[in-house]
Image (cartoon, rainbow, N blue to C red; front, side, top):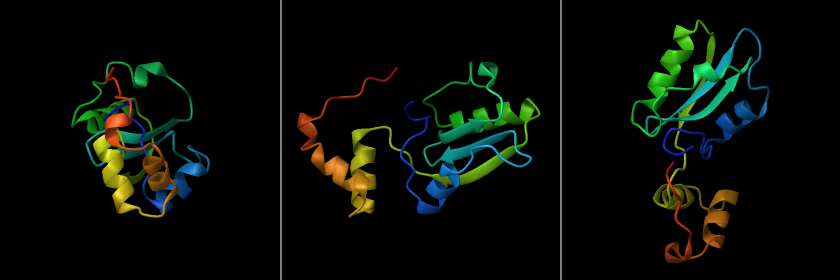
Length: 123
């Protein structure tokens, strides 16, 4: 996904939370809002495409709309911290600069100059 989807998790504590069981205890869903208004994670105890289909993606209110959809369905939602996600080359460069020495920063550097990178196609 792009501006509304699961991008790079930029917090060590959030990564630790996300690497455990996505849905545990009394929660039916686990959800992480992104700084850009989207979301970086959606975990469901039971997969139901109707919970996602029809939610407009790539908008500044996508995360809020998705969270509302989960609540409207009566799900108990465990919220994770709001984080930056990476949907564009500019965002990748910004996060890499903010996390020098990280694996992510090394991967962005390995991609080489921006002009040589392939462009992502929004869908």
